[in-house]
Every structure is written in C-alpha cells, then in structure tokens.
Image (cartoon, rainbow, N blue to C red; front, side, top):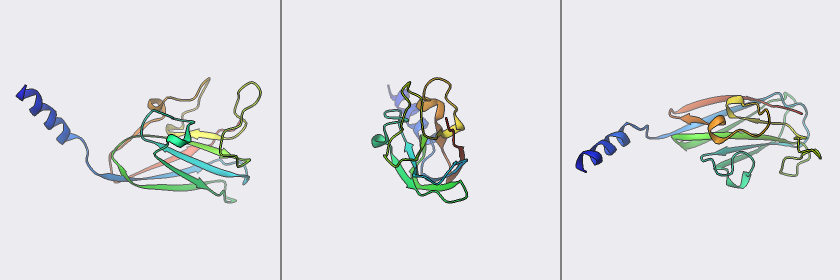
Length: 142
C-alpha cells in the first residue's frame, strides 16, 4: 500500500500546477444584431447548451469588424471547452426551426463542426497547461 501511495503523490507532483489566461477571438460574425454569448465549461455536465452550468461566461457587443475578443484570467490548469452563440434576437438562448435545426450562429472550441449533434465535452475540449492560451473560433451559420 505504501508503494501505491508514493506513486500517487509522484503523479500529482508531475501534474501542471498554477493558473493561466485564455484569449479567444471569434471571427466570421455575420451582423451586429444581438450579442455574442461565450460560455467556458470546466466539466462535461451542461456542455454545450446549459449556460447556467458554465464555469465562466461573457456577453459581448458586436463591433463592425465582425470579430470579438474575450479573455478569461486566473483559470486553474485543466480541461475546458467553449461554446459560443450569436444571440441575434437577444433572448439568451439558441432558437431552432420546426425540425430542430439552429436558426442562429454558433461555434465550439477546436472549431468542431457538428454533423448531426452537438459535440461532447471531449470533442471540443482542450487542456490549459501554460500561462497563456489563444483560440480563434469561426462562427457557423445555418
């Protein structure tokens, strides 16, 4: 048992410790209607659509450039995933057609492009293990 505990503590020692900053650039926004909602998740529960369970959130105005920037600081090193919604009608949720297809723009970390369903946390996830990580995400529109 002692050997197992020693191995466990050595493994913990090797894991990255500390905090970092995540800078996100979101490009390809088609108009200035509504807001861009950025949701950073630190676990699979709730990802990608239950914004109430997001670890951090940002609501951004849309400039004429068609791109927005957001930073999340003091993030403990670990696993994260991002979901973004272009909330054109400013109702704080994704709107769908009668057959269940999105009406508004969206994107995910890793620029995951869904074919049939939303990505899992693992598919869109990334590991923050350094002081600064940058992402460029491309909006998808129906």
